[in-house]
Image 1 (cartoon, rainbow, N blue to C red):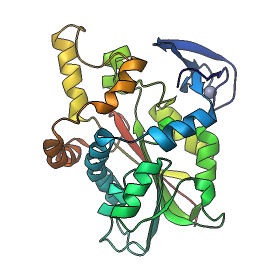
Image 2: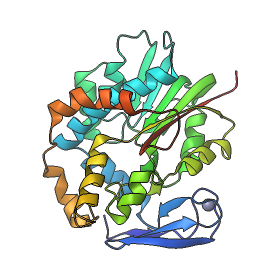
Image 3: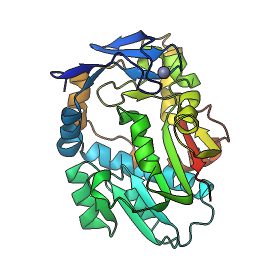
Image 4: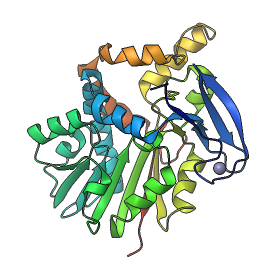
Length: 304
Ligand SMILES: [Zn+2]
């Protein structure tokens, strides 16, 4: 991944070149825009390298179990923003192994469609579930429209979020809703852990959102109207923060290392059964109607 890197010198959100460097993690420099505050990785892989990474390499048991746990939280977010899902169609972008769409199987949706780049994950979903699946947005018919489009932990992987959100907006029906969930890099736990915040993964997470930049992605670049916020901080990150505090910054969090990240796909996903049971209860207990937590979700609507 590190052999062919582009050098991005202007802000992908507002296009200005008035940017400054704020970090360098194992050779990946990141910049912040002086005009709009957007944070982004400056050294990113080429589009073809990124595609190859997600199409052929982005799958393992750890990903699979993590997605199964996160699907339960995403299901709760969906129900909060879409209280009457009956007869609605949904497009889940970054549908992975398909667990989230499967959770929605008995609530009367008219259509469940997923887009997933990873060939392996898409194959799994195709074999296990009855979703309609595409490998890419351009494989879909241009006039296909949906009542709901969801992006859970996707937008931080996208090099050009403005073009991406405009392409998705095209597939939204009048009165349709788009739901975006991503990490909040201005959250309290991110600020406390600094470079040790484990979500700084610059070969994957290349667009770092804050509440302001996530909202401005919608309000400045689409005609959609924001109508809902939810956020919470996962208990795993509180545990990192606690360890960081009691060891006075020696432990807790993770300092990014490209080699370690590449090798980490073999790491086991710990406490799967506990997380599967506990994480959605933690979400329901901790969630708030603001964007202050570490995981933030916004919902925006198209005009009728
Ligand atoms: Zn900017």
